Length: 216
Length: 216
Image (tube, rainbow over all chains, first blue to last red; front, side):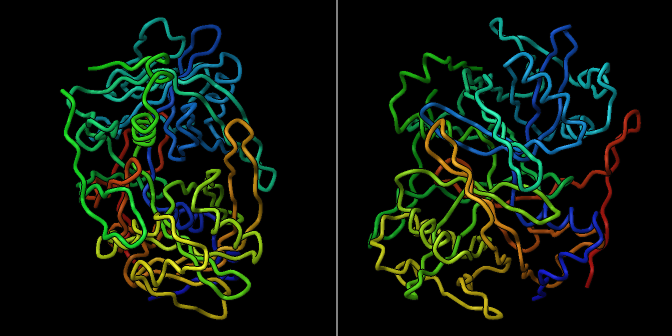
């Protein structure tokens, strides 16, 4: 085993530290956030900081860094109120990663990265056609995090599109079966293999596996 | 493909919606947070909402729900200022899940769930001995999220313990090699398989794989 101290962290080369600290958070969700500005220019960018905020109302958050290319996403969300969150599959993870490049704001990353914008049910923001799990989201709140200039962006989920045969009878959506991948650090992508679901934990009762059936 | 509308979500049975909304965030990190109160009673609880806040200073956050058993963790953090974040491996995921049961606050989940508290370098809070990646964290800020009564708890990472041969030359820590697992929903656990790391993206340059060497 190795140990890194607080002093080691403070003296670390900046890029090295960024890779390390982004790794130790654990496995992370990645998704493409789709937006459109008022003149119709679409934008899509990869984010690896999605976090569950609550189920009722259905709220999802992500962290927006200061001074990054992702600001086009934030500007569009604040201007138009709507965005989409699209899961990423192995079949297009390179295109998804490429959206993190510093494109000019007049360029749509959809076209530049080989992804396809699609519109569903008059929802303002574009979905990513290649994605099988697509969320429509309405902006709710931007909470500034003073300690380092980041922000937590919170939205309410207003639609969920998902593949047939991935929803279990108790509401669990099997995103592994749907082909969603995970990430670590800033640039590493992973497929997954289910170990087990476990029953709701109660004191002094041994944990059991619990595999609900799928809804057709 | 299936579509769930905003109205469907609002009318959904509560537990079904909780499972669904917790699933659609994507793959999530899970970790055990270790704390200790001022009288020396230890506490350990599983959390699935860790999020990277920043690398310099090294900040990590997690979402604290209102009215859950996890409040013992929050009370201890606010009282003592220190906590540990410990990655979870397949070899003890059932014990880790069991910490989510509603134990009385006089009970240490370490003992009740078959986990081992260990102390490193005079750090106040207990680490989980079974965990190979252990973070020492100093509490920095609690940000209340008014929209649903949750809070974002932010801490600074002050130590990192990790297994030999998992750190790459650019600072990326290979947590898959270290045996860390991921979760989905509220109760599903997954191992992972690395697809690839990708080079830093630049406009108009095709994405390449980029696998730095390990540091011994």
